Image (cartoon, rainbow, N blue to C red):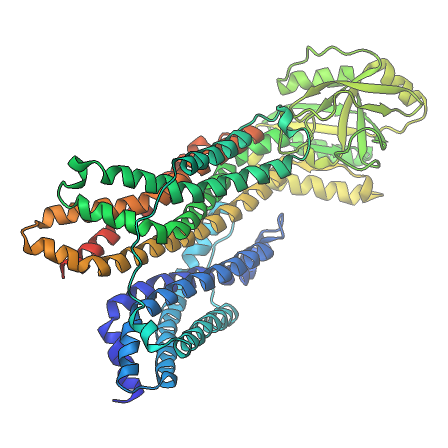
Length: 639
């Protein structure tokens, strides 16, 4: 029999096993090819004019997927190598050289990989328009995503996965050359020693997890965040990771040991087999289950955050950019041209002109921005007039030597970094911030910090010769339909600008559109990465359960011969499989819920609804993997 005939026979004989290897690999290729295709799609990239960073975003996602796909393929490959070592030992026993066996495995792997590569590229090409349409819809770009094919993404995908598959094939050949015949025959044997659980370590695992939760959930105003906040967050995450490992290592073992001692439960039906299997094999699954729990936590957190930001993009934009337009009044001619544009509209809610003093913050005012960062000094009367139009509280009392500061666009809206800070005004007078308001008085993108002082103080600053600037503010009712108006105003401003560096210009629509693009890209990337991580989690659990099913087959056959019914056998398998599948997802649900709650409280954003949607989708797909694994487990032990 020639080598090619032997390879063909092996694949046809083990086609079911290879299909389990084939499908996830093909799916990884489809996702990778999709990201690379979008990275080269000039129509979408050029249309995302307000962002300009879509290419690097997809490049980074593609690189991450490449690394993760390589790790996943190597894991899948090692699983199949372990399952086939007895078969390889027989080839060696019958006289086939290790070099020939290595060549056989090399070409088998390349053949399956090449088939997956062709299938993935074909499916990716067919679905490329659909993925592009989804991305365009999420980003809110007003273009039609056409069908676009390019040789560059296909070539890049082929090169990347050919290298990965070649490396895996070379690894197989090296493993075979370095393994003795005895080791090959004993590869399928499992060391089944009953693990011992310590109550103290079990309690310690809960303490580690609880401590991490407690630190993460501390309110922003808590003194625990006064210094080295990021180190404390990192420490809490490390505590949760350690606690997760110890929880699976000891608490789960303790629970299974306790169940095995309950005679009424242990000797009921097939519980003796399922409980014993779980107890004796949990030791070999500790690291894998811990990694899968943390990977699922990261997936749920990433998807929950991006979906929450996307769902709240309108509220975030309104908070950070409360006015439809803010621009510098440069001269009478420009002002007349812009006024004519607004006179033609019927949705102007309010308008106001401000004449703030533009000054530098100075070295002692705040560590939030550099000393030369501009501060806009606004008189109290203008502030109160504008605040009433915005619907904000105006009953704010402060003295002549005091000032009022506002939210500056940072993630933590409730944190007050300004009260008690002093600033020296032009003319020599000093004022101290006595009040902090957690809302934006002006649009954040104007890159100037508003500071309100008493009218008398403002007049003294003006009399000292400090320059003022004229700002015009407009609020419209149909802000999301002001793209054309925004472009016309911007064109007028640039046409009349003597020094563009001195022009202050902000458009709600532009910032809203950029937010849609940014969060649309993030949710697209996180959604596909989440699917890849879910696929990896389910596949790893699937592989391990099938490996255990092969070892348990003789035991279930004995039960079948003594009259154990199919219904009880299926129930036993579902219980055993569900227990293994539930460990990572339950821990991930707990961890990610805590992290999402902490971030929502910190940022002041409602994340519960979007996060529940993510949980529902993730758990639904996860249960699909569980159901398929249970069916395959039963088929294998009952065959």
